[in-house]
Length: 309
Image (cartoon, rainbow, N blue to C red; front, side):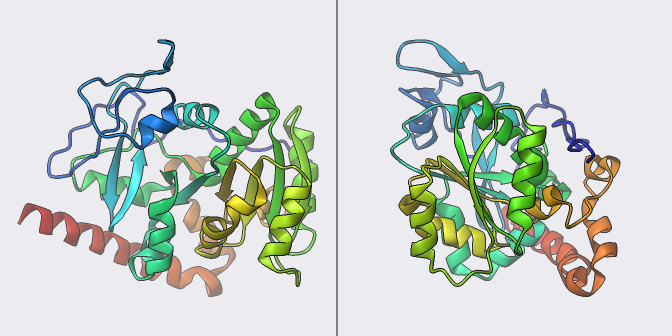
């Protein structure tokens, strides 16, 4: 089996050392000196732009303010991938953290779905996935420092899980998909411990699934139920699973199991993976991309214009 095609975290549209120029956009800086990055994440802004532990040891240095940018009414964190991993390595484990990826399709859904928008607002981290988010940010004079593509960044996160000894559970996909992804991921990522896998098509209730995950003593939960179902599931049930981190991953398990062929690396780096997926499944995805992408950009432009006015 081919090795996992891991795309470099550097985005094609923004370099890590890019400076942020808010222009019309209003960013919400999250800075200061706290006992953990988790505490800093929820704290009000201060003048200090570096984050430190209570013992004075620098955990991560933010070259720019750790901020959120509102895109179509959803707050998206403005962070490098390494900074996200630093956040996940610090802070208390007794409180579960929900990480979400959002792209143009996600925010189109959230635009008209209050329950989904609320789940995203309650998530601890909301990460930008795809060129659509960057275009929306650029309209407002801001650039995301890195494209945190969900499939690529989840690999980075699972490598971190292996290094930290975090036990992982896979939930979702068609029958056999989670098990297939489990086999490949364990082959490709040394030291990764996946303690369970189940598909998303069984008859078990969410409470029964959460109990099964808790019994496996998992610490990281990967959920692949599609958007917005996976975010809604995690928002309601993550705390019951006993995991300290949960994330929705869309088609990630399909890619890892080999059930769905992923776009070539060069398409991922250019942010046009959606074109490849559209060719694969035109009947299912034409509305999402052919209609949805222009609608997203129109909504982003309209909101930007309203801010100027």
